[in-house]
Length: 323
Image (cartoon, rainbow, N blue to C red):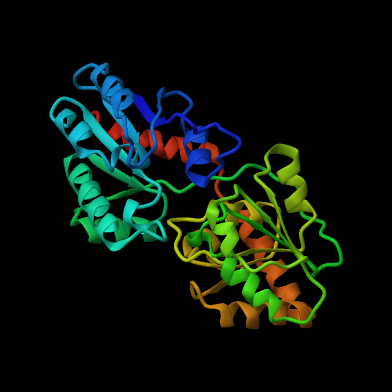
């Protein structure tokens, strides 16, 4: 079985949940990394050559970012290959797209998914949404796993806040910072993640720092030293950073991540600055509320699945298609 994925999947300067997922589940598959400015590349040569080189009848897992925007390249192979598309995020759901571009990407994605033998989503909510959006009878679900992680020790138990996400409109750092600036308390927020042009649109505040992407020990240290994990996403298909925070036993206040969070923290309406301001005020002012979120995080930590389980489930789905 083959796995076609973006060439920058292992680039530490471009970390993402989708890239982490691909790297974690890719062992044992024939990985083919293709270069391109996905999902709308100027040059599709690498993808065309990759697909042409796969023998007839083989099963091919394709990252949706690579394949869903170029049906003219992918669909002609659907008759000779078993194409399985892994959708991390529907292309049209990226925040900030103009309506015409979103409509075009959605139509292109629909054509690819209807030609595929199977479609895989990373959460039950995402699977239902993708099936309804594109009129698909069934979408498989293979949720992300987590790695074992040390428990967070924090600082004073409330002041040191952490957000891990690319700095984009979809991740909602603007909502988070505006909400925090309304709260007259002692707080610090660290926004870990690749810088994007959207950074210029976020209110400036000396209490907010943007160190860029962190990996390895530096990222672990950020989680361990945090008191609260916050994520104000406007849209997510799963929200792997939330389960990473929960793996550290870190209390969580977030939006748009029902499948990752479950009952492990406080889920707020997406894009609701008032809701975040109210919840964060409670966090700073109410010891009982902080204790409740900490207890929820520890309970959820105990039930998180592993990446080994994720890999087994993915391989089960792929193997079922070979029968």
